[in-house]
Image 1 (cartoon, rainbow over the protein chains, first blue to last red):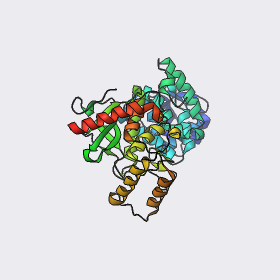
Image 2: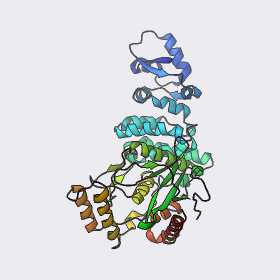
Image 3: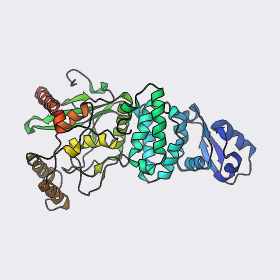
Image 4: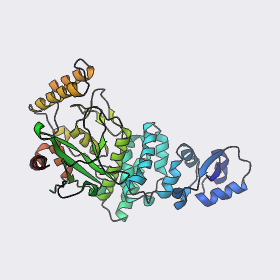
Length: 168
Length: 226
């Protein structure tokens, strides 16, 4: 198992706060240039999923906090465009539900915050919203996601009024 | 309306998520409803509420017809994934009850009840699968109970005692009796099937009466053939 080590949230924040970075490249670069790291977060890079496509993402205190609590989000964001069947979707549905089951609404809200509608598969455009809709009052980002999904659906030639029936 | 059966189709060829209905026991004149869905392995599975704390998932059976639902492909795939999750989250099954009020799968795919003694029938189970994903098929508020509902509900209570391990002096049983006396609407499997396969849901009883009768006739005819 190859693991890339990320500096802790505090160590990283002063260095990268407010900057857009591409995950894989900059993680490796930062690792190489920083040696006085107090503790680490393991970030597996050698899975087929995680190396498939890693998009640029805003690194922030919130993202690091989210990643520490729910490491699967990294794979999700990297592969969300190709998650379009039961086998590939089910593990993430279960992970999202685990957050909700444990009342980790803040973490789930952070997860939704970093979701970009344009990076979602057609199924996830409807699935994420339906799956989390019961908790939308606890998830302020749900409404933003609904708005961005509606726009994205239209751009893909889908009718949001049909696909998102009951949600809008 | 297109009915599919073992005589003309293979349940392995379903379109991700559909309704399955049949009359499993010809002598009992009772329909049973569930969902055929494509599982993570790619095989079609039957998700249903068979009885009090029985496993929710099994293989498709020849005794059931299946009907397509008016959802787009993306929503069908989502519902199939949700069904897979419900099966995994409730490995020991769920309570069988004539009182479905306050029940849901909204809490993490795991069955949840606000009332300790609530549960689902096969029909309300299917309703709640849709409802939990904000795709309600039945207008519950306008679905009134009718006197003949009590006959069936009384039979169910007897079956729960005889085969479900429910004691007659248990709080569970007494709760059911009280709700029955108060009047609880019954949702027949054929009506729920009709609601699920008819566009523009949610439906009131009058919306789906003809469709419901057609499904009932088809289920009976199929049970006589199998």
